[in-house]
Amino acid sequence: MLMPIARLQAALEPNHKRGAERPEEWPIVRLFTPLGKSAWLLSRIDPNDKDKAFGLCDEGDGRPSLGYVSLEDLAHRFGHLSVRWDDKFQANRPLSVYASDASKAGRIQN
Image (cartoon, rainbow, N blue to C red; front, side, top):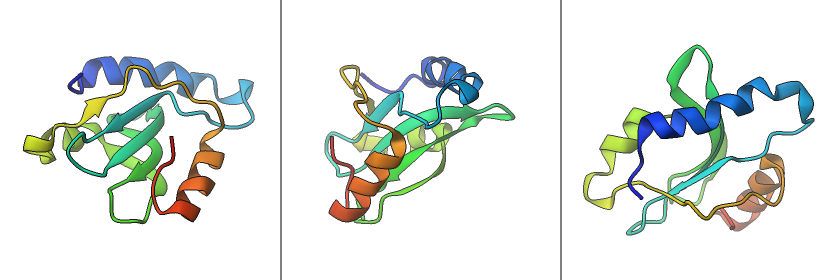
């Protein structure tokens, strides 16, 4: 599915409000480029800037990192690669574990 920004914001917003309930963040959404090597595991939206989402960002350059990404930028900069939403993604570990695994492997591991 193509990345619908409003739906993505709605999915990530409640996770920000849950902060104290979970000692560690878990990714809610996985985005990817089907023709490229890029992927993002996003856990929450910035409450002060609905365009920014936090998560594990992998631009396909072998250096995945935790940080913020612009949803509008994701939706527009890849053009023909089209960022897609993985509707079947279910996190099975905290974001910190995904980040550690990705750091060792040089890419996000599913």
